[in-house]
Amino acid sequence: MRPLADEIRPQTLDDVAGQKHLLGEGALLRRLIENGTDANLIFYGPSGTGKTTVANIIARQAKKALYTLNATTASLQDVKNVMADVDTMMAPNGILLYLDEIQYFNKKQQQSLLEFLENGKITLIASTTENPYFYIYNALLSRSTVFEFKPLSVEDTIPAVERGLRIEQERSQLPFTWEEDVPRTVAAGCGGDVRKAINAVELLYRSAKPKDGGLYVTRDDALQLSQCSAMRYDREGDDHYDLLSALHKSMRNRELIQMLRLSKSLVYFSTSLKANEVILEKIMRSHNILKYEEDSDLLEDVIIENKQAIEMAGIYMEILSGTMDAFASLVSNNLNIVTKFLASMTIVMAIPSIFSGFWGMNFASMPFLNNPWGFYIVLGISLVATAVVTAIFWKKKMF
Image (cartoon, helix red, strand yellow):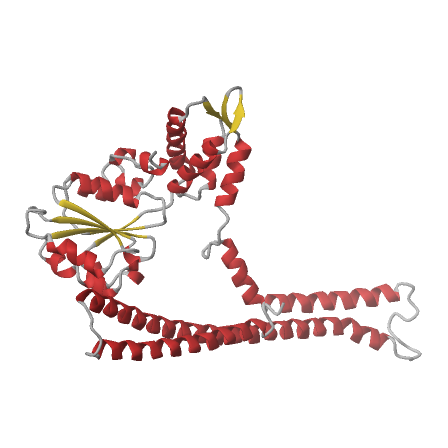
């Protein structure tokens, strides 16, 4: 039996959930697809937003031979095998290459595509969950057009969830029903990821409770499953900024010491990578070791990956160094703010002390000495003076 996520995959642009800014009536990408574009496209966005689905729809409409690679498992030899079919009977009208997770291709693998993209013999459709301007090389970006896929809203996700429930209902040998709020609960808990929502539907069906000779799914089951699937750290969300807030408020050196330990680990890591680089270069230059073409290609890939790791380690060390300097400044600034606040409070609290000191002197003649309201008058004057000084400090942002 096919997975539900594969069976429910839309076959036309009208069936794709969400992405109205790209696929709605009159949208640019929709016009390009309907006109049969040969442009090289890069789809960027979170998982489960329709990137693979749209790429498959484009591939079916194209008259070129379709080749599909996943960069997580494909090697340089796989790319060469695709290129070998250019201008052959296997691909008389050219090749449409769909490359999933392109961010996992190294520089050499990406550059191997450039020649064929230039002459139009290969049309590239790539998808990535990472920012393409960080992970895809400029030479490839300059020959492609990037389209961003956005997380789906709850309203856009509900029809896909309902369609998944109906498919499970048709598959089931027993009557399969669910509470009315189940589709909305699943859609709200998937975080804009349709694939996650469909997987949740499949799990709900498998865990459905027996009821009246059939299977039944409750809202509580959907809510519990949605909460489990939504437990993840969002570095751009509130949790991330809560951590940043704690960092901004810190006045201790504990976090700075932790960063120093991390910097020390990066130094050890970078040193080991450089040692690996020397060994790999010696192996590459050595003629005493028999190397086949595939071995040489693999060794070149390892050398490139090692060099990229060294560069990234250096970048992270620079970022960490800058962060440590900024953090040290934050700690110092926070201490200055506390010192300023305490100094301002000392000045404000000194005003009543001054008045009480003046009127506490042992003289025979003092203002309001014989006045029955003298104590309250002096107290009022000191409070007014304190309030005035406090207002001045507040206006000057001393608190």
